[in-house]
Image (cartoon, rainbow, N blue to C red; front, side, top):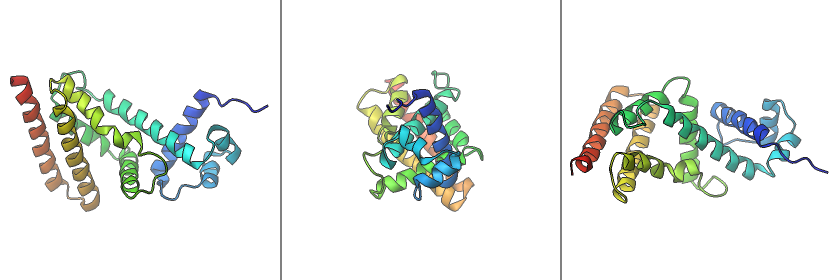
Length: 195
């Protein structure tokens, strides 16, 4: 009789897989090298995940959970700071040397998803990102559907700026544009607070 996968052990395994992908990338993921890197057999992976598609889907969900928890742990989400300040703090946190592998992994996922190269549905960390930030805007008084529209615009600009910096390395130019974006976001939120 087959053992039922242990949810706690599965989560630990998913965290290890996220860390592996942050180091090695997603495009060339293969079950055997992954298992070897983790010091496991492929049977351990197939015990928890029926196939590579299920492993990827579960890993994307876990990455999303971790990323949201990290963002929510940054100071200011409780309303103490402006949205623009939170955006800037998020930027600084994501671009710390120790966090760059995860930022690069997320951008790799974005590229693969845009190219239709990810199996299954678009990962939650991409498709629901605007909803996540819209929640922060709603907490600051921006009504729906404006919160979702402004979140979509802010997220797209933020992602584009981060890619620009990672590709060109031109920090002064890109961060000047980021400062303008954070100012615009605070202006937008302020218009609703003042109205």
